[in-house]
Image (cartoon, rainbow, N blue to C red):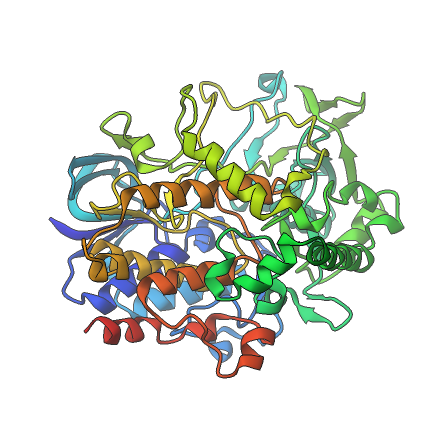
Length: 574
């Protein structure tokens, strides 16, 4: 019997394990991961040449274990090579004795609740037999980029060339660079940009298909933005700028009066619109979307206001748009109608021949394992199929959201003709409900039976600081040590309050970020700092972490501001 089993050995799973062991060093803890190495997104089997982090050195590291710039051979101001991040995570696991607690090549297939505080985890290991472990507490830390979504195309069986997801590019990239003359790339995300650059920079022509019926391409930004040339990941962590983003949990930062003025009055909304207009115009100017007819095809459909983590960074050694302008990357805004031998037939009548079709088509937005007993998915607050009407709390939440943020009533019309990609065979999704987790972490329906949590079920530029805050929150929650569990008269959460807050905060994403994944799971940029404020408040910790008021408002939050968080909390509850 384990005290805690963690599924996932990436950024989130590793910090979860370290945090829990910092607080409970005698805990019997096991980490399970299907990959061949530690690292999650940055595991060795997912890294291909040229892959770098979006973040610059200093903003993508654990607070209590900074990147060793000398050992890794990297400098401040650089994007971090994927291979270096892999080394860093391996070093982190070794430093905190997590390697021996990690079982790799172990794909979790079934999670079964045996009792309110007992879970059976069944996994298939490298030798293929199914093994099981039982644990009192369980954390699913597989994140949102674990299970690739590969669409099914009419005529695919006759294509006679590889069709694969970008996740598997490492296994094929050498062969493509040696023999492929032309490759079709489908999708408009940051990973599409990465693949297009990797291939085009090595002499492979890319026909890049941006679906006309899809969400369009991501917003791309240089590392430094605004006339003052500020780092993007720093800009979105400055409290002053976070106030310009409508946020249902924004008041957790203690500046509710400013937020109410900005979003609740017409004068305030004028300045909010100006802020976002300037940001969009700045990105337009710096990327030069409209300076060439081919790059114009990559300009996103919606202004930056409606986007979240789909605001990404141009982290390439040279200008990717130069390959677009000179024809090495050919952009097609159309849908794939069908495939034939070595050819994609597009909805606009164009035919494109290729040696491979790479799908940068996203991920299945639900945990990859099966949960038992049957029907427990709804109780756990994870995506599930249902034809039942949504809870009345949803309409109540919608009313509150639009009442507090009138700007969100004016939803964009760019996606009126949106059509989801057809899923692969036998994977049709009908009426799939989104994640409905309290604090985006735990099931609201069983809030007072703390035995399971989900870590990393959100997208944000502040990946590591958010992961740290979530990991400490989970450690406290699973052991009845959050303020609501320790200090309230009932020593428990109010189930009705929790149920509504879970609906309110998850429903908010639908209205706030239609240009991203807000309808399906938490996806935000400028809202990460107040989100961490909220978690620290729940823990009873200091959430304004700068030394002066001036710094609190004007200096960006980063990993360094959350150093020593676990020690602070241990002192708090001792």
